[in-house]
Image (cartoon, rainbow over all chains, first blue to last red; front, side, top):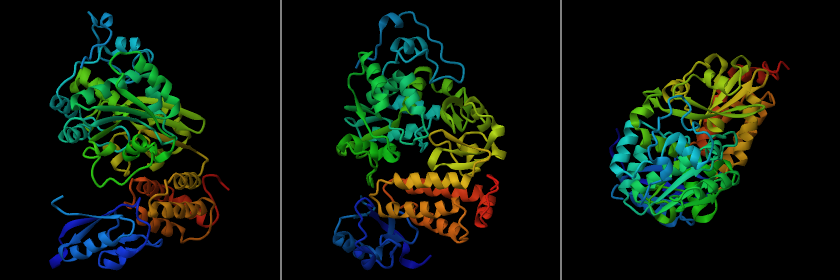
Length: 78
Length: 410
């Protein structure tokens, strides 16, 4: 197992809000690609993306900069 | 809260629990009198721990499709504390399904009993029963027939595929808009207006009413250890539908016969409805239990058995269903709103015997792309059904790719 891959937080995509604006895929290229329609696509698919500790700050940026508030970072403390 | 029903019936009335496979459908009519004669009065309220323990011993799982253990759902709601919302879900969005409507027309009092018993155990302060327009009259009539059901609010929902999903039911109550919503937090924690909300299918509630009357042991006296009790099935034939109550683990062919279908005329059955799994005629002895169906990647779901008769093309039928499912997307989630029409388009070409041999691969890629990427499981269910068709009708798939169809011999 590679060093910093243990997910401590989960980035949750609210698909009912997501409008394929693309800021999250730019901020988190390590975690998100773009699907054929412009929506964020995680490596394993799904709506909940595991965020390794070293990407948590970038994930917070993605949450804050999403223009339609479609992202939420759920930390283990939640 | 008083649980008493008409005392004249109660006094000295010795009720014998139903002994045959007709349990939910055992009463001699939908009236409260027939209900009391058939099942006896509603048992007195029990503490939530006792209710949870009885449901756990009974081993009942939800009958709305997801088959989640009922006791765990009730326990999760209990953990959120009192003052929550309990909802009976009779939305039955799946157009092939008729069992919830049948239940609300023939045994509404069992559903009301189940709702009242669960709500009392949880100390809920709102009770809703959600259903479509055709069931409003029998439900309201049943509520008016008894003195203890005035608290139940009957809510009308729309006849659409995704309306039955639990978060869509919450939306129906909150905003009169029955479409799924994002729920990163469970509804038993935060549902209707952020209150703890327990959504149970109406058939599940009717079973609960009987389990709390006659006990877990009685419930388990029919069915199999992994699928105790009875289930309602809708046998959907080309010429109509019949609702059948059968013990858990009853072979598919037995339920088909009870539903008026000669198994010799069957090409395949779509088990679990439009989000279900195709099973071919050579496997009709499969028990309709989660364990029996697991070998096919199938589950009883909401009990829909759609018959594809011999001489009909499974791929063409799948294409038609996929088109319907794409139209039924609420359109709020990008992967579903874009992906389902794309799958339907490719599947439509397969159904029409398009010779493009890349179509099955394209369909498989699209199903991977949409799965798990929505507020509800509509894309996942659609993907499952389509993939099952590609696998089950593999021979036809090859024939279609060269412009032929074995089944319709054209």
